[in-house]
Length: 70
Image 1 (cartoon, rainbow, N blue to C red):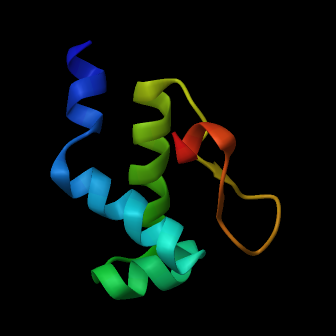
Image 2: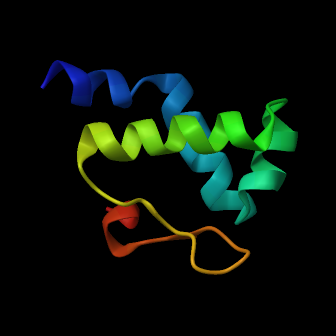
């Protein structure tokens, strides 16, 4: 439970919102002043902590999954 709460920190919520809004990990990373690999790592940490896939990465775009929109 503690890990799930930590995953929902304001910083992580901002990362997720920025990826969802821009539709791209690279664009979100630029906007947030991060390298894309660091952003991707942090998003995956959130997904692992919540045990849910937030983004569909099957294309060059990052689209929210149904679970990610909840």
